[in-house]
Length: 362
Image 1 (cartoon, one colour):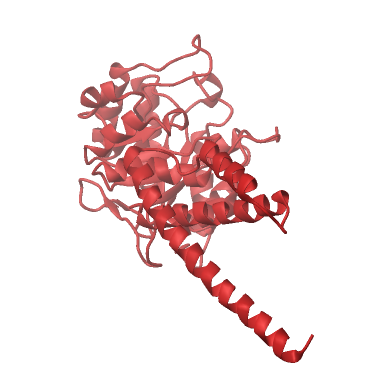
Image 2: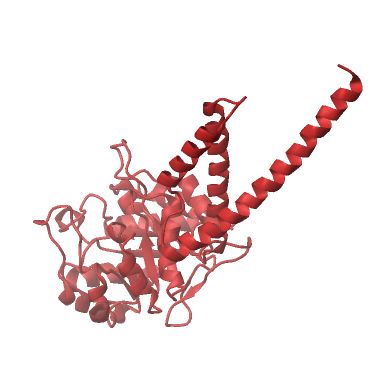
């Protein structure tokens, strides 16, 4: 074997490499067009039946020297790369994705002063559920004393058991509206179904979509067709990517005023109610320009660790936190173990005031 022959064969390999590169890029362009058709039809990118058919056809056409297993392994990598390309192209186009480091959505409330997403650390607080005028008024007064503008007032409570307290409904919303107006606050309340939108509209300043409804596309689209802010809660069984796509339903429907709230995910741990991944929250702040809030009540499921949880939330650079507060938690009609006494709320606020955070998470 001469040196000239070696160089000739290497030249052939180089030429084939370039042809393969060109063919791979041609394939990627065709796959990209297929992805656009899938998106238009509302289909998912991954089609396992189609992938199986292609692999079978390749196996039948293969004449060696590569084995069928090697050919299938090589083409599976090509399929994966193509799917990753489709996903990255789609992800780059979604409205909630941050396109530049300094991009951020700032939501301004009707008073023209209160904002969320502008680097100020906002507190959303109140009882788990509206129980009475006295309960709401006492709580709201304590919150207003510390400058809290977002009053949590849940009139509808989706519970695991149908026999547990389900909320006061519209009468509860009337109580919340009266109390909020008295103390100069904005009502944050959960909407369960798009049929409730018209009734709740005059009572509520910020609509809350709970974890159970995070992927309720019909509700999300309906909330996207009005302009009041929407707090979207991360379902404990959803990935962060699924969380962002849920927000996209609202934003792409016409409402840019979306706040993401993280409550942790279900795990094997029993010491807390849900596992709160601070690293994932920090990454979420980088991935999206929407305001991000941490729910320290439903993630912890207990009030005795509220202070360190609150400090961690502020330190990670999110836009605020949600905490449940009740005048007498042991007699609360829902989530009694995680709601703070009013005095504990003041202690938490004092601890947050002492915390100096460098950087904003952006």
